[in-house]
Image (tube, protein in one colour):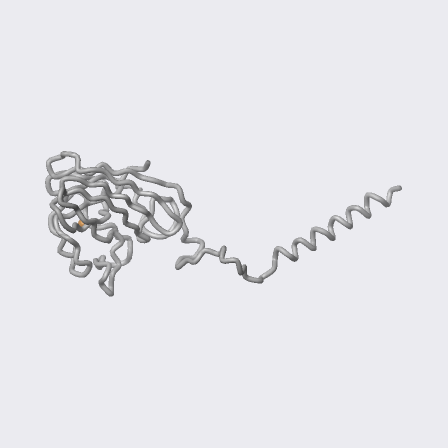
Length: 201
Ligand SMILES: [Cu+2]
């Protein structure tokens, strides 16, 4: 009678070793479930972090809102701005979470954590500026409804890109003119006309 429990244990160990072998298979999955990525697993951010922005013009009047949401490889930014001149506008992530009108110089330059000076411009071969974003377009009433995406910044504590919710914060800033995505230091996008602090949501 004593032998029965021992035999059962040996059988259980055998089964565990078997399933362990299966788990260690190196055959790559063929069902397309492996995410295509240009970042290593360590750089992928946990999703779910969000932030809100209350935009104001140089006189302190409301100029709309923006929301930021963290994805695994970057941040989706929805911009719902008002009171702009019709046409294209440069929009960037600036390095300091302070928006003092009318010129908003308090927001500092663009977010940039890389070595050396930031090279601006999404279409510039040497681009390294983490605050760069595509332009947004204001309609005839001066309203913007747009979503832009950046892999250069993050809300999450880990992941790729510059941390926007760092000690001195960050700001979302809309310029008077379009960004040509090439010239230094801000793509010729001119005055800072609307600014909002990026606040964890
Ligand atoms: Cu800017």
